[in-house]
Image 1 (cartoon, rainbow, N blue to C red):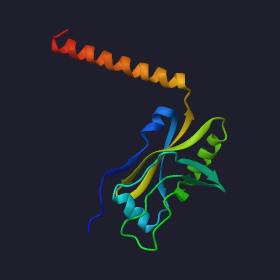
Image 2 (cartoon, one colour; image 1 turned 90 degrees about the horizontal axis):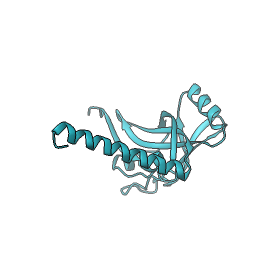
Image 3 (cartoon, rainbow, N blue to C red; image 1 turned 180 degrees about the vertical axis):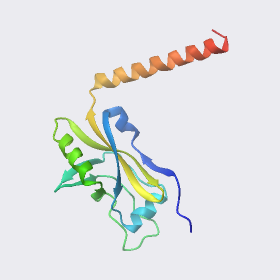
Image 4 (cartoon, helix red, strand yellow; image 1 turned 60 degrees about the vertical axis):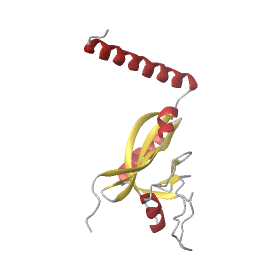
Length: 158
């Protein structure tokens, strides 16, 4: 059977881009059990309230919810267990150094399959204040209005 090609997104954390300013992103593999992989392939996962944390020189993903596999037996996994992330040593050192800064957190943005392997896209992020969120919304609305006006102008219906 040929290996899967391309990228298939399983879950995405859209709220993270709203709540945090993204500083840097990393791609990491995950140490998963068989039933977790089968549940992910079925498209079932949630990144709500999940976060990454350094412990003992390794990076772990906390509070990511992968529901139990429906055809699983007593070998099924715990849905919110702590999962080890697979990163290169130099990436772990960079992340550890940046996590020591005040207000920086490690947030998962997406869980996906890349050429058959389960991956997670992590972001070093700084939390936004409510006025920052309002400013971003206003900027996005202004950009949308500008593009609409340019589109009308280009069509000649200005």
